[in-house]
Image (cartoon, rainbow, N blue to C red):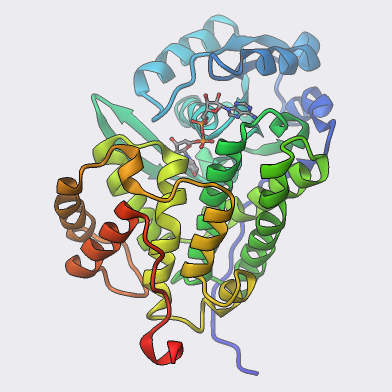
Length: 361
Ligand code: NAD
């Protein structure tokens, strides 16, 4: 057995996991030397934010419930004004990537510590990455000050996640793990974490589709989301994330659905070049990584066609141009024609051809 050389580093998040752990939020805020905590949520999740505030007790400084998609700077500024007027010295975010993004945007500007309480599988809570928008322009930055200090994973908060979002958000998390396996800066530990995350999601999501209230499957899915998110936070992403950012940003597409639809196609694209690296993923999904992920997504009732997101076929040429103009590193170079044909298949929802011809014989 041979071992490639590698560099491994991991991030210093404190993770508290388990049903009922939400009750520990005050203790976790105090651990970060917080004396007054502003709770953040979307308008839709205000009831959850109020529950968090109840658990915070005398530490609660109020609820700011205006978190929204794409982390607009204008919303962040209003949240910071509330933080200041309520004399808060830490933030607690309860929600998906949008709410956690708001907490990161506040933290990076004010230095206040964050407790993140995720309620989807997007994984933002364990990454030092922040995407924001101002005047319609999206910028992304990375830095240790962005990473939440503490994450409370209480699977009870995911029991309300609708089946459709559970599936697309779950596939979104799996995308982080698969891309981590062939990342240029990957390591054997990140690969182990990625495989464990993928296995957890593969086992949990089919159960959740049939019984969204199945507690054991909810617990397993959130555990998987943590692992997959950890990989996203630690290593560089590649062609899949590049395409999702290009399409999502240019055409204003929903985040989780875009990931879910593109995943089998982008992984199939890479698998043609590095089938051996993706062999463990192929093994998990019936012998092929890309095709297997397509069959898995279809079995969950996930959206399979970019056309269902309202994308016109005429947009595909421009998307292929944009995605290949300033590409991320990829194990398979982003050739414009190959990306255009990948997008065509994803647009019409065809099963990707994933194995190189010699391996199919
Ligand atoms: P989201 O945060 O936008 O949430 C979608 C909707 O679902 C919201 O209305 C929310 O209130 C609701 N919701 C969330 N959890 C719920 C629950 N348990 N029950 C009922 N409703 C619930 O969705 P998301 O997919 O988690 O996050 C997407 C955003 O996060 C994107 O903007 C993406 O760019 C960002 N993101 C960032 C990173 C990062 O590392 N910076 C990683 C992943 C995602």
